[in-house]
Amino acid sequence: MKTREKTNPQINDLISFLKKASRENGVNLWQDIAYNLERPRKNYAEVNISKINRYAAAGETIIVPGKVLGTGIIENAVYVAALDFSSSANDKILSANGECMTIKDLVLKNPKGSHIRILR
Image (cartoon, rainbow, N blue to C red):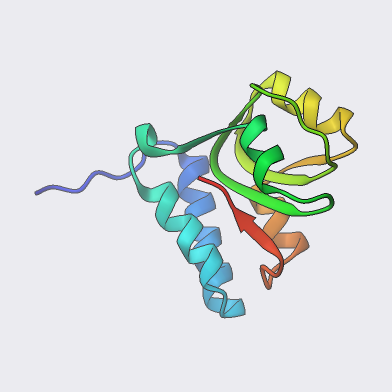
């Protein structure tokens, strides 16, 4: 079976960046996120704000290997890193005094990957 490569150069760059960060820091978390992003786009995670509110404590860092959607409410200030955010999800996270960032920003901020929860 022939394997297909991603056509989006930004996704390819992110995957190689995550694999490199995993090797350099000895952290399997970044390798796991890269593996999730190598799958077909239709299998990317789509996480609603309500799920983040249910599983994240105040001040916790969450990573979503996909898109964050704006359905639901969020009560705690959380730091969320994802591939993409809907505009309503971005507004709701920021209004709860949280922070939205890219996955690459999170790797640069926390290269050891400590105290991060993955939501799929």
